[in-house]
Length: 580
Image (cartoon, rainbow, N blue to C red):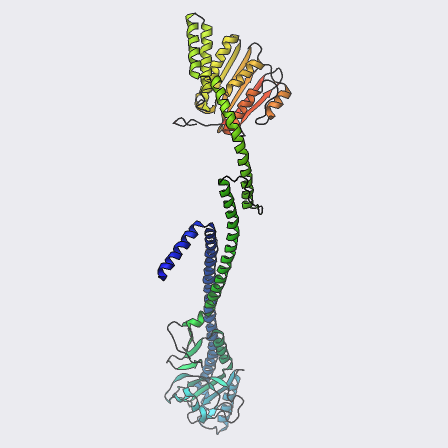
């Protein structure tokens, strides 16, 4: 039951969402907002986490390297000190140092010299330098209780046959004699067993101790900063130092480790993965919270905006429905000057226009019927006209009136070109042929008193030109330029890049300056004043209508010196199927 109810609600919501523009806008706004927001949040989290983890990892590595450097500095210093003492004892001239308390003057002098050397080798960090013999007697400051050395764990593991250096690790200074200056301080110890069978100090032990407070303080600072578990072990696996806090190693731990070159100690710092990625996890949590809040805010703003937006559209839709029912007095309220406000204004204007148009249509329909009746009375059938002219031409041939026959023939050809309105753009060659027929008529009329020169390459004749544009210009030449048809007409067509340039000139009467200015500056649909300008204006408008306002005619003339008309238009050819 609940499943069926859920399906019904889903279907209703889906259908309503599909039909409601508010739901579509809301969905689009959410998509446009949430996808970049989530993408930016994810990218920001990824980059920030990557940078933080990388920097934290490098910080841990650098800190462990600093620990290595500080420990190695102390170890190298102690090694150098023991090396100096060892070399001193191997000198045969120092054989006066014995295993017992000095009894002779020379032994006392040797003891004083050796202890002076030990004192000179001390630094501000040195707690004590001693040479402990097999008998328990020792050289150095008189503040050591040899019997308490067994309190040092690593000292107890040393045997009488042990050789070389033995690092005792970190331990408290609890083997002093009485209340010494460094009692209880943490120290780092090094014991070197002397191996010189021929020497008096064979089997003795050099003991050097340095204050380890600085190193331990550094260990604690590292543990506090990184929250890592620090462990230092010797090559045998014995623990030299370990963080006091309980720790369980895990395979996912982040590990920083170093091996000391001075004695082979291994420094290992282990940080649980959860602690290592704590900062990045915090960034992720904050990013998720910000993303959720931003999504909710975006949803609220999108809902408010879409509701206000669609309310205006719904009101306009209701108004359109009323108009569709015939309520032409309906108007919608205009709110704001945005696109919807413009749409409301346009709707109101449209309804007002529809009211006016309905009234005008009623009048125009009445006038149309009257015009159709008149058109039947004045209609001329082109076939009837051509048949009649052909009959007259045939009659003139029978009667021997050759001039009349030729004049009617050329008139028929001119009328055939002018009355063919199936194409507005025709090839230039066809227009020039009609001009030739027109000139034949003028030759019959005036006689051979004028000269016509034409220069046009055959390659340019296929290009298109508006129909019946040159004939009115030639008519102007004969009607206004020439006196009794006498004069010279020159026509030249040339290429100018992707344009054609037609130059038509005559040596007729010319045009006055006032009339010339009127021809070159008159606006579209403006009727020229006086005679002689209508043909030029019509031809100019045809070029502008077909090819653009940048093309057309330019007239140059001077009174008594003739007229030159230059026409420019783009090169266009007829399509193979006859389309222009």
